[in-house]
Length: 483
Image (tube, rainbow, N blue to C red):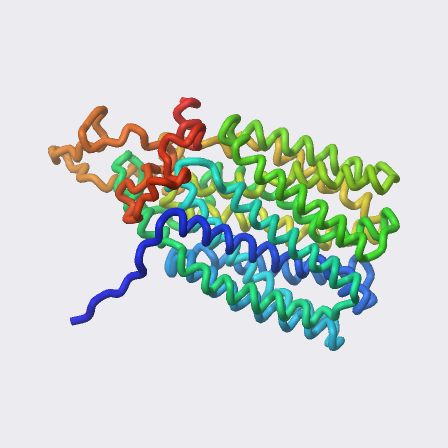
């Protein structure tokens, strides 16, 4: 006779803090690569459009990672997804750095960037799914704070990269130290993740009339998935184009040195961090849609100042506005995609895949245009996508059970909804779907039961404001106000 061994359930606070750490480390890894792009270009003696193709390698890897992430997270759990991602990140970082320093050539770097991108894509979905579960358990908006910790990581990475540029530190040791240490820290930290699959099974015992099981491919038939994906696409391009091209744009377009370009990227990332920290209470107060629309407007204004004003100080002001405006699009898209816990992994994977088209097509497109018209003018293409994201931002509105049910019916081809209760004619009622029934939870909103310790199998943190069901203005409260 064998006994199943399960991991002890962490507290909500421990789970949340572990997610914060993983987001921070992910940002550190990304910014480490991005901040050394000027050195990589110099080592290769590459043109702007060639660098666009090089960056494309990491984007292709990310798309592959996102494609498999839904299956990996659903089968193995988000914590295993992060561990697999960490190994891929370490391999990609170390080998890419060695390829740059030892002069192995363009295609060797390109291949190793695919491994780095795969790890980033898989980690992205895994940590967002786990973070969305922690957010649901807490009952208030914290996803922008998770992404703020990502921005803090990128800020640290960009700062270290700027110092490495100033003191001419070779790329290989820089990438090796950051890649290996970050991967080891991720592998250890995720031991404090809870198992979101167990939590979602408890949440799914809600017997509201929606199908419990939806194919991971069927979510692509839901209009809300596509529209949320367009929001993430536009705002990811607003964020990603800065990450990929801002240092070079400041060097080529405003005459700064390489270390100055890396420093301006750090300014952009600092603005992103501030926007995400300040954004959580704003989202709780006003809702996702108004905040997303204002964010798009601010990003457009900032980008316009950077492109059209030939003054370095004013251009940096534009960079700050650009960072503030781009800060909330991706996290709000991830929260909206994960509103229904039963399809969270599949929808987050689908939405992130759509969003990562910006990272796939954006670098070569901007590089091609930049080679012919200059990088600053090439960034005009980002305007169109930011405006489009603002126009469809209504799709990110906090979900009600009825809206979730409509999406389920669309995903299953209009089949008759099923429930976990016994819905045979004449079967006794479970009581959960009767108004005022003893077993009913009238406080359940778009994400199921979000009360601390409510049948989730996790210990409640009575002193943790994250698990306070009365947390002012939380997502569930907004859904009730909107109805």
